[in-house]
Length: 148
Length: 318
Image: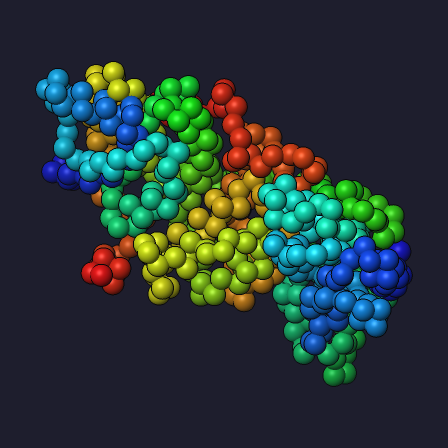
């Protein structure tokens, strides 16, 4: 599977990691283009449904990243998120999702280099896992909700 | 432990007194089911109604399910786990503590009908519960004694909180709890490879019809619109696609995390006998390991997902 290019859904907090991605871009830092970013106001906005939906619809990996604890724009959003992450991470790993498919990180808007390194690492690890065949819908036909 | 009939008469007596005193407008309890090995939920509103209340080895349903959003004063007949659920609902502001009266019944575990039917395969027409530690099932030309410890529900075997200690009143003496769940099977499962774990959980729910009986029986599931019923956006397909089914069980596990009291109502309700509580046990193990929290053990504890510590452990986040 050397030519396998994974599709990764990334959920970034608007204030930190999205800023880091921006900074990485304007700094001309090179990172792999395998992820599609969904911008969240805060990682606290992340509902477990989002992760499930991404995997269900064929994502090979999911990457969630936000502000460092203590740096939340909304004071405590990522503290609350952290508790949810512990549960989601543990539950998905327990039921047999490969640990490297689901990644969490804290990247501030100044850490463009960390963003670059993390992006490479995430993509590399998901690549090593191979395509997601077990934790997705077999039939990816879109439902009526998308047509409407 | 008094005999079941003594408990029944004490529950009736207490219910009548509560209704007469105006302490409760309705007493939610159990009455005899229409088929053997069952009980039904029953709402007693008058002294005459109260004579239908019973207590048996089959009082499995968690009646705290009827509390959220209920107006007026209500009394609840509760086992240890049910009382914990009711306390959880008070902490989650689903019912006012002042409006709730818990008639606590120290429990010795409830019987799993499936295990009884596995032991006595002939059609059972009658159950006699004369002693504390055994039942007698009768049918056409047979009468079989079954030891209660052989047919206890899975969650009752590992229940450490059989006595509803925070109840407003206790019917009978406290009963000793069993050794608590050590999650050894879950821990053994976690030692396996991801592929084996995925196979285990997919196999676990392969019969699931997604009838949502587990959700409906669960006292934690009181959202006005459940995520499975949402249509804009629609998170779950309406067919029984295996991935949608797995999603349902995973999200249900997450929603119940830190709130589950292992009452076993979900497994009792399941028409195809899926061990749906496995998902809850995974999240409960996480909650206990990380935040040392168990639901419904006191009136003022805050659910773990509504609070945080600045130094919560989360080493996996880099």
